[in-house]
Image (cartoon, rainbow, N blue to C red; front, side, top):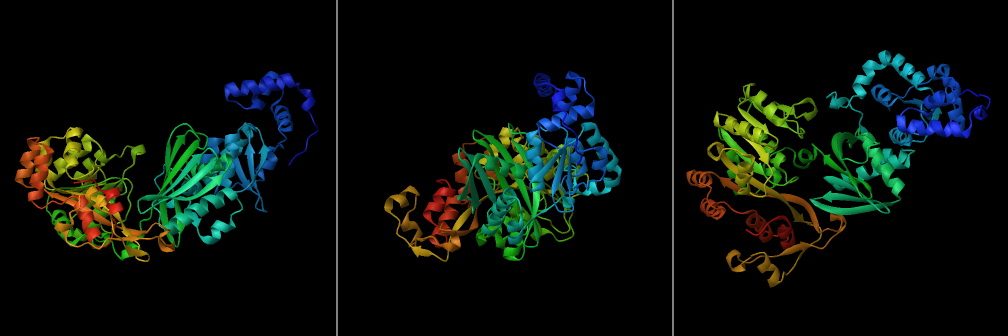
Length: 562
């Protein structure tokens, strides 16, 4: 790096402060404003700024000899942020800046590099000229590793998670993030919650649908750096801390790739992050194949679901809250009915499982490919069966209903608490009730309920008040051997290990269709449904209690009184 004689004395403190204040207002660099205020040549102004901030200057000839780390900071992002990362033969990381005041940029670069960064100062015009020269030679490589909007998800850089990678990293922030994700995957978590607190960061895992406190990290600065590292991995704006952001990245663990969806939310103590773990192979590895039996439904419910999934046309709606396994159930149903003679097309956000022989389309809101627009296009592609990942609005609902009425089997999901709430959901969307019930074959509502850990299960005796609170009449059900887990290392002290699915099924007949069209009271609709054999989610959960597979506390947590 070049050495220059000190020239700081050529500019008085008043002129320098005036240039600094002007730079804050204009968004230009201090060196650019100093040129105007003190009437200096660009390189002399830069030299003064470098001496004031104790940051060495990088000349164009020296910049030409750099080895840019475009694998770490792609060219497209370098040009966007007007900066450059370079790697020395010894493995040191250098960053070239035009403005030493940009602390957010420096924090972002350090999180991106995953190690300490040495900073050098250069004229903005020199940085832009260097990046322009590099553009043609690295365009092909950059197209594979940059551009989050390019759609080439498989070409994105993948973070490798293993015991070795967690311990080998030189950056403590990278170690914290990697070890948190590594431990969450080993624990079988579906989500990781990073919650900013007045003293630092709380880390929680959602395991079997319940949040479990994992650890706490002290220090608000450390908390900010951890969130910044996640933003870098998810290709989010590290400088934006006032609005929610959503992104994604991919990790590799135990020889398979796992997609992670990141949600950043501002809070009173900083920012919180939630990481959704989409392990596409976990179910297949656990059960050998994605089938309805593997999901744990009772045999009677499976008969009804298969009947609905094998209809030649009409609509099958699966409902339940987020994380209740709706999409997985539809995937399993499609896997069973896929015989190679029907054209099956899905539109999803995102594609969570890859099904051989099925055309799967990912929603892309940024490119204008919504559920409604994609569904219209699918109908021109000669499908027999269509899966719509979720019905969110009136337009999608109306197209799905019309598709079911014109000879297609439509399998889809909607958010509702139970099978009866679905009618109100579609009415609220403004869908014609007569067309809706004419297209609808049946509704399937489901929940995931925790199973007692087999390693620490023991008999228990619930009190009479607890039984009455759940509406249980022992005389109707016969003897029940109540059990509960005491907590052990295998279940992380929770008393539960794994989950099973429970279901509530409503198969539409003429009476039910007439009641819905007439907008009959929900009580009449429920009475008619029970006469056809519909059981509530709570009744299905109590069957598992009677079988000694779950607890009364879990039934109360997951289901409502029928």
